[in-house]
Image (tube, rainbow over all chains, first blue to last red; front, side, top):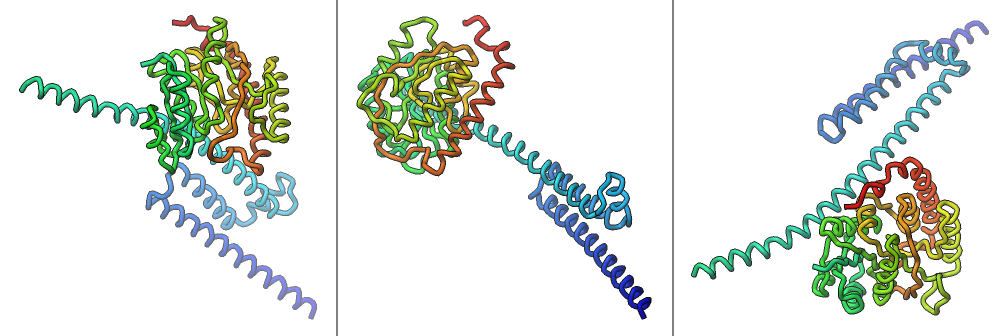
Length: 144
Length: 246
């Protein structure tokens, strides 16, 4: 009786584990597809897509390769594999955010310089046509 | 073309800009007036031009620091010898400009003159108490970092010569630039002076530093000034001012 129960419990936990793996694989594949589609539509630059594709690949490898996560986490001395995953994900996200802050800072600096240049050129150009027309008019008067 | 330029940064100052430009022309006729329209959504640029100002319109709002820097770039390109910043909202009294110029020319090694509302006890417009405490804090910080006694570190009423124009055209702090600009000037060994002025209540518009933003302002400026002071060590050795002046 008790043996049967244990066996049933083991069976269900195995099924849920398989289900989880399928779910994770599905998520990784969907992430892959979404990133790919965004690049195809030119909504996402390859440079930034690579990071997300890398993340999806890591997820996929971990889902397919059973025991890799357990092995890796026990090697670094983390008892629960899922904690290793969270820790790695957390670090990944933090680094990514810092990277984006750098990119944004650079972009704001560039757009500031562009705005200044544009404004100064605009002022110069809006002065010039007047001179040009007055000159050509002057020339025409001189000829007649 | 004059040798002197008044840089007037303006963001949605349609109510005051024409009067400010006219006042500068009246009080300091030697100065060309350049209005930097910082992406105004009202007709600030259109109001400034008929008053006799040259207008440079930024395509979008870039902040007062970048707007002022744009003015210094203009001054550098067109070879102006002196540039003075005058706020577009009427806080700075253009009648003080000749006194700033006199102070700038009084000593050959003075490159930067700032109008201070705290140098002498006047009956002009004074800030709220909280703001004065903040200003005193900045003054203390500037003293610690540079050894300079500055009574009004947040004043944007500032005049500089060719040396300062070159520096600010190349490097000028963003967001809330006043305090940082003092430290920057010190970094490049620009000799500065203060002249007592009286500031007036603004004619229009809101202070850029509202109550909710003042904590952010305080922290941002503290960080910027500290970083700027740390940066100085790397840069003083290769100061562009050590090159022989043309």
